[in-house]
Length: 143
Image 1 (tube, rainbow, N blue to C red):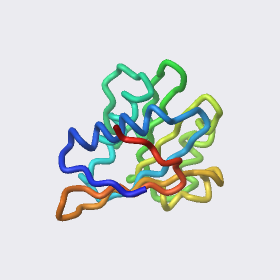
Image 2: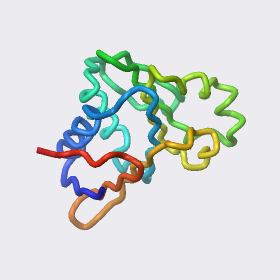
Image 3: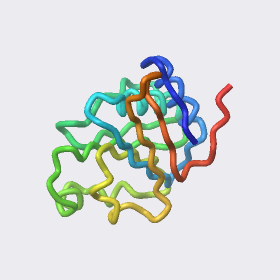
């Protein structure tokens, strides 16, 4: 699946549509340059999961958790980690449960820690806006 968002509002709306279809046990690696909109996409996904709390980047705390109506969203940011061992030390593996939807920014270097069914969403700058590519997710109907 490949889509283009021309604004932060569109990116967040896309995240909301994806979030509606997420279920516990899912793990998604979020790829993109600094400032590409990964956290904006996560904010929309949180809304789609029924989360009313304000979602912020876990850049310094590394992991934030938000309880939704059905699932708990676990938002990780591994940008500052130097090794997969550090991810294990902060308890990342404990969040990989059927009750959680786990979204990992900068998780590509930690792929072997992820379940085999982990999906990937990549956000890239494009002349039309931001191009969003999803691998491993069931296509989402955006209406």
